Length: 413
Image (cartoon, rainbow, N blue to C red; front, side, top):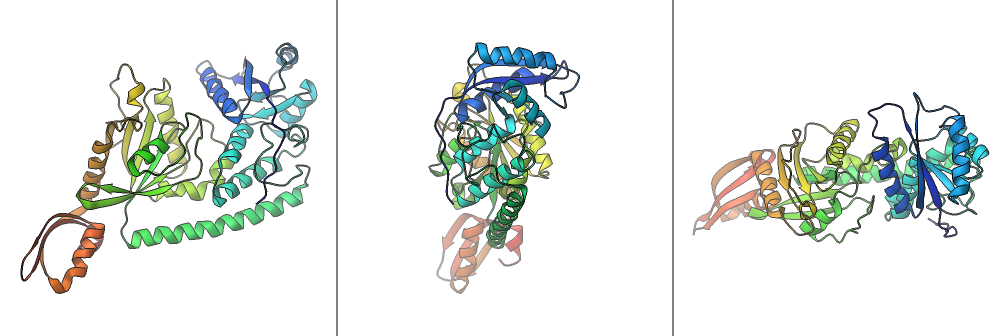
């Protein structure tokens, strides 16, 4: 797949949010939007919050605020605006026409970050599908903002060279992408079936973006996944084997980070990838304990999991980044089966996590004491592979084994 590069220009943007209720966390949402904009390579030079009963259907903000924005753009020498909510085609058109500047929204910024972070073929296809679905409904509104000649946010990543392609071309490309992703989904299901057949247990690592999921995977397995103190530092899921005490193993799968107002285009495009968490045996929920918005982020993660149909799993919550916490709080997560204070960066809590994983696996296993002749060495090999051998003694007549075995293979041993 060919990538088309754009001119590298510094964008100076003004953030805009609408507060429709006194209890809205619009200010916090804009702080996060500022981080997203910075990750995408732009600079925030100002912000505007308007209190309204509802978002204006035609222009996002009210007429008076449009005039204020026009003056602010000139005063701050800004090149564009970024709205905290997903804009409709009509809102795009009105804002561009009235402000004569580049108009973007939260979804466009996130899509742009994803486009720059996708590495695997599947990741690139998923991002392109999400981008095309987003653009298909906004061809008119995005004509000026999305011109590749302008460069900047929203103009990078896989896709057609000309954004002025018609809807027929977009539909054809979307159809092709869906077919390619469906093929990859079947391959993923085949691998999942093989894991189930061999009784390999899986733990999915989930959490808010930048909570430390990739650092955790690297610390535990040496996966060499990119670690950055940025939102969505890694995008493509990674699966590695984790060796546990008692010669047991479990597969750890990293997933894309969640975020407030996660675009539905991304949820749809990454559904097959996120299903890895749906079919996992254990959920490891990584929380940034140093973040003042920790409780809100936890709520967003659980809400997203429910939207994806991921419920009824055993959950281990890791209150991570303890090395950055000055005054440890009385940390709680009523939805978790176990909580552990960790620092993936320093290794704190990693052994406790492994022991908890072993306990959870043993809870679904049956303890056995057996004596096997040497002609049944294949059974012992199976126990070693999918169970946990506690004690193994060799005698002239055979081997004495004490072990925990999964319910699925109990009848075979």
